[in-house]
Length: 394
Image (tube, rainbow, N blue to C red):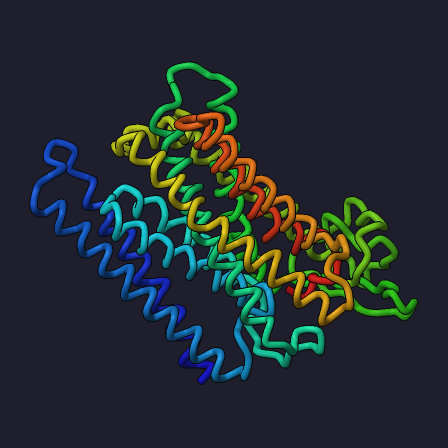
């Protein structure tokens, strides 16, 4: 069953790639955007997205059958499910607006999320006691669905900014757009360096003391830029250049920080190469490819937040607090994951207030949608890889 699950996930990934290609072909004809063949490619792209989603849903069901619990209990499973919810949100919004350009950018972001997930251990393991509850599937799946819908607001908001920001002169807006695009490229960098060092069979080991003051062996799969705060390297491999801060406790904290740093470095290299090839800012190169009406993009981003925010609130806060009371005898404990979920809630609540009461439409709304997704991804990446808390197993 586990092999069938892996095959279905791989198949879904390939189908999503073809879906992206079909959507790209649907907008490639600038002179005749309403031609029958353009509509045909958009329809094929939508159908292939649905087929890919069905395959990934099959992965989710078969992995559930193989593990005996909802497959959202570790970073690989949750991130994969998050990517699937992004695709579901795109399918729903595409069915409403029939906008092919959205698929050209939404599907690659979902592909990045799924590819990012595949870099983590995929082994099926028994649930730790804290996760042996029906609230696992209720809380986590609802939160991921909300985040998946909110992610589409990011895509449409980013498209709005690429479409409208003046790229003829350098400004703070163009700088921030490049930083946003670099952050996406850094995810690609993480995938590249992970595959590269894994393919090369690289490993280096440290001995450090755990929380019980017992010696444990920590194995790095990448050269150690950040080493354990109280560790001793057991071989003559590269590094470390500095030690992980002592407040980042936990055996895996230094490995996660090291991985995060390598992702930023690889992203910077890839970004630099793209700038050399394009000979212009990346957003400027993409601007000519985005022909969607700004008002439509603004409406899609708002609709995505209006749908995704209450779902996220229900799953990430209300259900989470009920489960926390049952598991830890308290509703709230200021764990890093809990704090960041609260920050996400407050941010999108402020977004809706500013849009509905203060008239923050258009560019202001788009910047907020982009910032909101950065908050979500910081929770997914940095909080999971760098900060240590009760949710570190996720």
